[in-house]
Amino acid sequence: MNRATKIFVPGFALLVVAGIAFGGWIQWQSHRRLARVYAIEVAAVPVPAGAEAVARGKHLATTRGCVDCHGADLAGATVIDDGAMGRIDGPNLTRGAGGLPADYADSDFVRAIRHGVNREGRGLFLMPSTDYATLSDADMGALIAHLRVLPAVDKPSGPVKPGPVARTLLATGRLRLAAQEIQHARIKPSQVAPAANADYGRYVAASCTGCHGSNLSGGKIAVGPPTWPPASNLTPHPDGRLGQWTEADFVRALRTHRRPDGSEISPVMPKTFGGLDEIEMKALWAYLRTLPPKPLGKR
Image 1 (cartoon, rainbow, N blue to C red):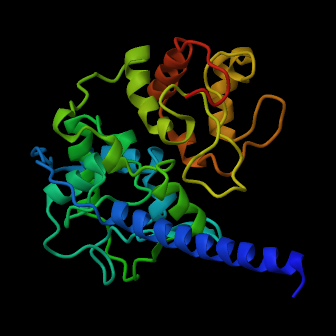
Image 2 (image 1 turned 180 degrees about the horizontal axis):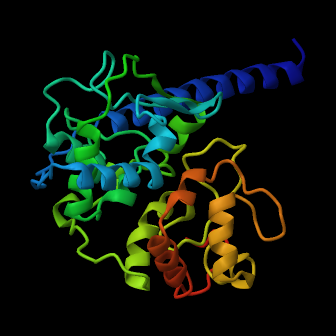
């Protein structure tokens, strides 16, 4: 064995051992984060009955992202199927076979939606509860009322299997569960009334923060596969588009999924946001106009 080989072989072996050790640490640390149990005190939310409440709940489920992860019938859908990020399915939320159990309580819905925690106390992977934590009690109740009357669909809930990149991001803290981010004991549900103003727009925009960031400056979407484009900058900074748009441009873009220049918006941006009603659209635009300019991705 020559001198170069004597140096290379031990060095290569050391790298292999280090790689195995690092991979083991990633598996252990990501599993630990996924297995953490959160002690949550769930505040009761009144769930109204009647067609008006159910209709409001259906509107929220359609325009706040529920159908994008759980399917149009809320019986489950594949959100991510990527070698790096893994296979992530939104579960079946109906009472059909493979869906929610018969004893699934209103408090369980609140725990999942507002806190991002399942009945066993573990954080839900990819559930964007930071977007919904301050949902008003009236809207939370209406959403639950809608979920309660969904037609039963027999469909097994798909897997939630984070891939190697997702596990690495989890282990290193670059991807955090909503349950980790939310200050559970300090949640204050919104009490803002629907109106075409910036205050209500801030309330509507909470559903945008999961992808566009807390200050809506956009950038890399942490939970998305590497192929996903960065979320757009929604602040009036020069490196964004909205500074040059009018309210009519903005509304048309959400309704048609096309920008004013005719280019199509990425399919990563849910088309369902085009279903916001006129008051929500005007309020959202009014709020976006109040944002301080931020460079793309400076969250």
